[in-house]
Length: 413
Image (cartoon, rainbow, N blue to C red; front, side, top):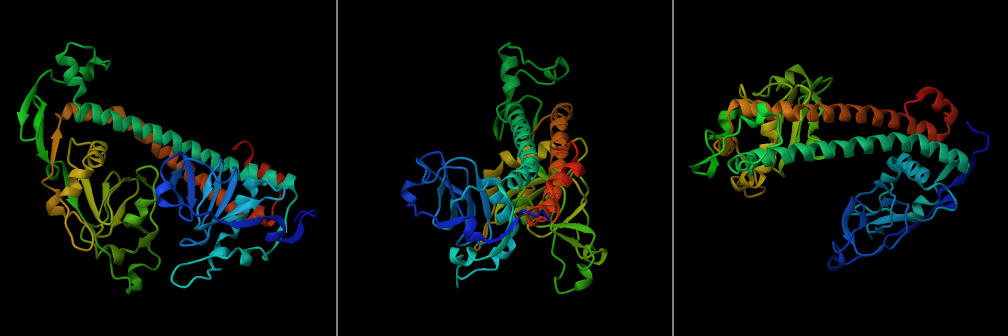
């Protein structure tokens, strides 16, 4: 451990302040982020605090920590660092990320979790000098920056795939362009697959030669279930991925690489749909409807899903984009008193404007490289996050020094 680290308290190094109230009428009227205990909750037309800043969940969600690079408004449900006392802001963020599990236990609320800054300030800690802080922040921040870059790249790739789906299969742009004698700016092998006329169907005008088919013809539609949680043999030592909508709720890219819980062979035997193969399109069917992902691991699912295993000649990427585009239609077929849910029987008949198999294949071959890059970026980000999480407690506590990290990581940052 570094000899120049000091024994001190949180309050001696960082001054926390309760967040600032904001009325609903003044929210969502600007571009300044309003940071609540759950993250960015809205936007304002002016900032209350200059960035960079660090914000802690105070009420509702205790133990959450956010770093804000720009000017911002700390919501009343938070504590924010009013004075860094010359310490590095990003290091302070990682310090509180390390301390978060302990802070989460300091709830002083009754019905609603609440954190009091006077309980945080006296916490005894060991504190590094500013040069060490900057080194730690550079290492951990470098990993987070790479994760963020992957996220932005994936966002661009996904936007590209969505735009192509909409152009080809919703707006029928290539058909209209051919009818007008315009250049489609596509390879001839793809351009020739589009007709230059429309025909009338129950859904209105669609490209000639295309068909309106129920989604149940394009995919095997199944659901799942939850093995009894009281039966330990279904869960203890489980190795099979078992998904709930919660596993999809936090995804920033529609790629499912892992699940929070695993089940055993005995547990899997209790689920009629069994282990769904890689490539299955998953859609949450309730609370809420519409979380989407493609399974990149064999996975069993609970009752909160509709799963689509594409039929021969049907692209799972086509189904994914269709389900995203058809969200309002899907919700309109849902029912329920406690919460809306779309059943498999109501989902299967939903109409899909379906192109010929050759064009379906052309779409898949065009967007598949984008999707594979997204998967690769997600795998990279997962590795980076695991490395960051392993280094965080060791660096913040002083167990390992920056020079050791540089030797371990080499040129990976």
